Length: 246
Ligand SMILES: NC(=O)c1ccc[n+]([C@@H]2O[C@H](COP(=O)([O-])OP(=O)(O)OC[C@H]3O[C@@H](n4cnc5c(N)ncnc54)[C@H](O)[C@@H]3O)[C@@H](O)[C@H]2O)c1
Image 1: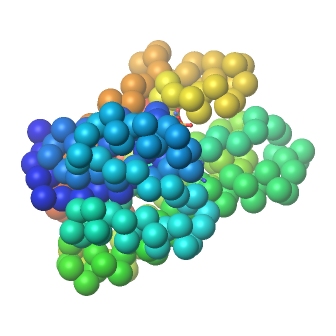
Image 2: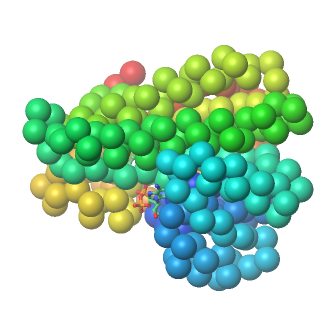
């Protein structure tokens, strides 16, 4: 267990799936946790289910003004924002690269990559000023190896890995650590957004022969959100049942 008492976290896409598991784990570690999600009914219901240390704020990660409001909400809810998890993401259509509509490319890059950039941009000034912060970006193994029929998603997640490395260099001596996670095949709603054949392809290449669980991703994230991580910045951690390529 990591002691996060006194820390305040904001998790984008925290209403369900991996984000929800991260919210629950951070609360269990003693943090206050803000669910930022575009799905207001699910986010509000979860916050009231989880009790007084949880709060919900409507957040579309593609909106810079939403991010400013979400960071302000977390700061007033918990006193300061210590932890940001950029988790919100979509898989996009399962479609061959040359038939991918430009608007689909922009939709996936906008949420998965630009949304992560905007979250970092909103949270970093306060973290740098207070000389403390932990940011975890949820990328994907797709960003390392490139998934078939998923050019927008793979490109966005490669971008998240590069963004993490770049921002880490900006904050290296400022008390802020920013790292990312590259999961593969975690059983959530997102697995239902892709075609059944594509999901079989994703799980089928996992050497452990099974999909991952949201609690497994939340455990790695909790460590990266804690003071136990102190000498890692700009790193990418695989959580992929052995599907590690570099
Ligand atoms: N499930 C997997 O196999 C897998 C593998 C690798 C990476 N990931 C990544 O993990 C993250 C979470 O995925 P998940 O499987 O839990 O998905 P999910 O679909 O279950 O949950 C995604 C959450 O993000 C929210 N969201 C979507 N668009 C948003 C927006 N514009 N603004 C704010 N919130 C928004 C949704 O409402 C939802 O609550 C994503 O970034 C995804 O790419 C998932």
